[in-house]
Structures are given as C-alpha cells and as structure tokens.
Image (cartoon, rainbow, N blue to C red; front, side, top):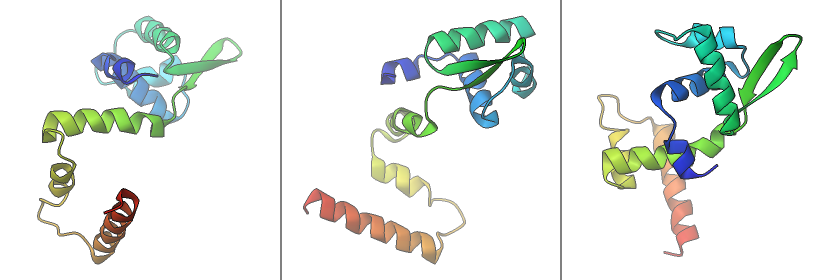
Length: 129
C-alpha cells in the first residue's frame, strides 16, 4: 500500500479501520459499537466493503456474518503515520519529535536514558560517524 493511499483515508474511514485494528477482528455490529456518533449499520457495512476494496481490510464468512480483520500489518502503518506527524508538527525534525517526548513534568527514567544512549550509539555505528 502506498503512502499516498494511507494518507487518503477520510476521518470516518480511519475511525473504522482503527476500530477493526483495536478489536483484531470484528463484525459490522461490533464496529458500530466502537464508533462515536456512528452512522447507520448499513453505512458502516458499506464502508467496510469499500475499505476491503481499498486493501485495508479482509473478511471471512461465519455463517451469514462477515468477520473483518486488518489486511495491513500495524507495523507497516507506522512509517507513513510517523512521517505525517514528523512533517506536520515538527517540520521534519526527528530531534524535535524526540525532544517533545521529554518536555513534560516527568523526567525520563534511568532505564529510558540508557536505552536512548544505546540507540544513539547504534545509529552512530550504522551511520559510519
């Protein structure tokens, strides 16, 4: 799935995809229950079919019901999602993004600092610096 396709989901489509990811697999009724101010059952059913056609979801039949599940691994969504956040909120600055995680009143734990240190060292070695 291309980055452009990932970014082109509408608000309601993202909500429906998020509901299916949260549940792991879901019927139309279960998705409706997850949505704030949900549209009709038939509108959600139609959206699920559209999302399946777009490659986001797949289904299996369980008697008369369709059970929907994600067709895209969650790990495959991280890159495009993080890129969008990075560019829109931090002007493309990875340092700014990481720094914002520690701009609250709770300082990082010693364990977090050690993990970050190991990550920095690994990146230095991989980058040849």
